[in-house]
Amino acid sequence: MSESQPLLSPQEIDATPVYPIIHSIRSDIIHFIDTPLSYDVLTAPDLTYTLIRPLVEKYGAMQRDGNMSIVFCFLLNRVYFSRDQNMATSSVSRTRAELCEILAIRTLREYGNNLLELAVVLTTSWMVYSGADETVMQLAREEREDLEERVGNAIEMAILGRSKRFIKSSSCQKVIDAIWSGKCVYQAESTHSILSDTYKRNPIHFYDPHKAPLLDHYRLKVPLIRSVLEYTNFLILFVLFILAIEWNTRDSLNAPEVIFMIYALGFCLEKVAAMQEHGIQVYFKGTWNGFDLAFVTTFMLYAILRLYGVFHHSLWARSTGIDCLALIACLLFPRLAFVTLRNNLMVLSLRAMITQFVVLMLIAAFCFCGFLYALWTLSRNEAQYSAGTIAWWMLDLWFGLDASGFERSTQFHQVFGPVLMVTYAMLSNTLLLTVLVSILSNTFATINEDAAAEAMFRKAVSTIEGVKADSLFSYQPPINLVALCFMLPLSYTLTPRWFHKVNVFMIRIMNLPALLIIALYERQAKHNGTTGFYETLIVVTERAYDSLPRQLKRLCKYDSVLAVSEVDPRYSYI
Image (cartoon, rainbow, N blue to C red; front, side):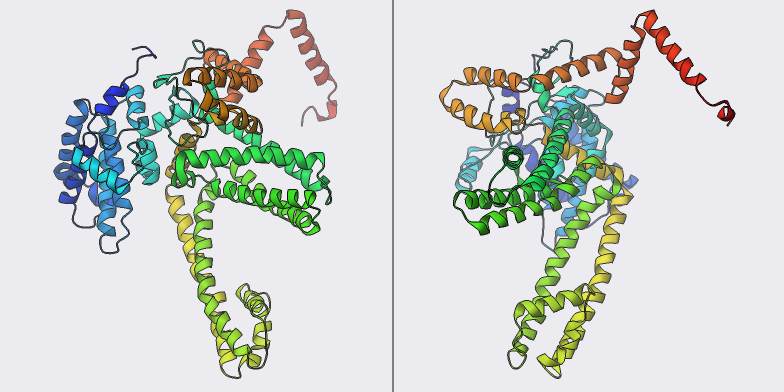
């Protein structure tokens, strides 16, 4: 089968019955699982032979008959069961979700080592209402006006359902590694693209650099290459931020600050486009995407205040804008550390720990507002302290910094003041700290138990995020701003064919150096049979040295001999 012939045609994908399979799986899971069971019990030999194997045989037969959406249907049902928030049924739903994941892993194994079929199964966006009756379609349209039949592929469902065991399975890892490295190429589908170019759709295929064009603009959407480009773009943004904050002038905009504004605006556009393409739920599965969203918000606040202050001669706005620029440092420094140490266990666990810490602190702060309101009400009689002053004293007690609240507790009330302060101190400084340490320790221990699964899950998120459907991602910041202003109007005026031609031409011109470097590296790696950048660099260097003239080789050896002869003999035996 050639690369131009897809394994499944669009007509076959649309004709594949998906909706009946989804509800058949849901009915079987609900029928067989009516009590909470652990994962170990589900995978025990008795249930394996009496429950799991018959279901695998049933849906495996459908899969062998040509229905390649079975794995997607299992994972979609896992998302459905895992979202059950009812306290009475959540434990049973959790068991049903785990059973769906087990069945998805078993059915995916039937494709064996056929990487192309595995990639088609995991990356095809199936129509969830395919095979549904017209009555069902009518009810669905009445319930939702903007009915969307394609909700994602199997890997995206695994991410939404946090199916870490499925992602960790060898079959799924083969596909993720192939997509990540660019060995297996597929084009993502999205209806939320800002700059949509869907005129030419390539089927899933294996990439051969010797058969591909020299300036292959599709390589800019390979997750591994995108991660390198994004890391480089972030380093440039980091350097421009340092220059802007060190060389800024309060009353005007100088060159470093203007350059930083333009580059950061392109960076923000890229993050907003990523959020729109994949949705909030998938986007926030990324390790550092929360920092990116905070950066976008803080930067927009800084830019608005700064521009307003300069052009409307507002001293307050200019000064506050510089202050907001300084706050961005709190986001860029940890973001740089997270990107550099992406596979570190502490970085992997830090995201979950920060989330739980923030949630616990917000709950505690809301509860302690009752103490604040009580003390502020008591102070109206005599002390007349403001709510801000009382809150500051409470914060000192919370973090164990100062005991001013104890000293002034009798000024609120002779009896209730000391009682409230002592009770608050015990709850905030002793009980809350103990609970916080216990929760964070348990979180770290849970992630540490299966750090490999967590790392693979994060890599799957990065892989799906890296395969972009929006053509805007083929333009690097800040050139994407020019592309947005120039190409977006053309997308409404040109035909899809001519817009595709203009878009490809612009991408190749704007990314000419990067595309040449990518083509050179991939051809050398293919020729030498290497897999990593450093390995390829070493092999190419050795081959270049072997191709040197004999006189230059002798000169290099002569220099080495001279260097050895210059060593002090007193240290030659050390």
